[in-house]
Length: 303
Image 1 (cartoon, rainbow, N blue to C red):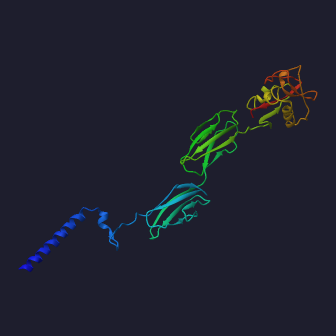
Image 2 (cartoon, one colour):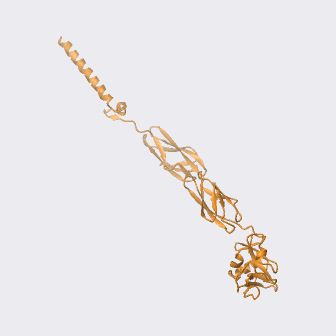
Image 3 (tube, rainbow, N blue to C red):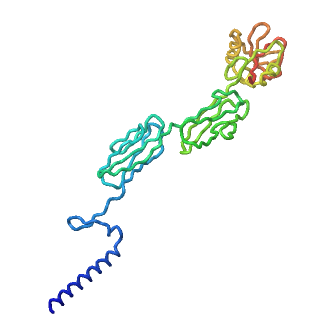
């Protein structure tokens, strides 16, 4: 009878211990319940999942990006799974010379792997169409490389932009500086020059003609886009004798300009006299309308 009582007591004690252990286990976090036990009796926890990141996911050709690995089990080994870029043992990725997607991979000591994709873009540049426009001609901005969408702006110029088309501010606008910004915020600016469609000779950035005897520059330029004030400011009274001579030589006349006061029609500016002298009248402001039967005027016209 005494033995039976002892066995029953032991069974009850074991049963109570098991119930208490189960109740305690139910109150533990799931991670603790799933933990394994090391040989020394301490709990071990699985390392965080291996992850690969980069400081930039979009770079231009031959630029670099730094890779970083976390989680898993160190040490880590970096590699290029797809693409022609290069990656160092420290995770420094160097983009190739061509635009393409590169898949980068890291493997930890336990063999786990993680990967990311870095997009390699061509450098942003800006082209124009037409490439060599005449004055007053609208121009299309044609970006290459970079990442769309693009935003266009005028940095220097009197014209306006609508969509990707720049319209000059008038026939007098000879240069402008235009800008494109891509979706990354990368900006590129470029100057464009508007040429003069000159049927005469170009000197000093202006289009010159030699009128007939007795013709005014108003009549000479009537069918050539109109009178250009450079007739006065470049080669006339407001210009210089050397610049008048440059115009005369370009028009096929010999050098040797005389800068003097002209008694007849002093507003004629740079001219060829009937006596074959090349003259620059300096005693009156040069005008478009001045004319003299003895003068062939050098006239700057719009085209």
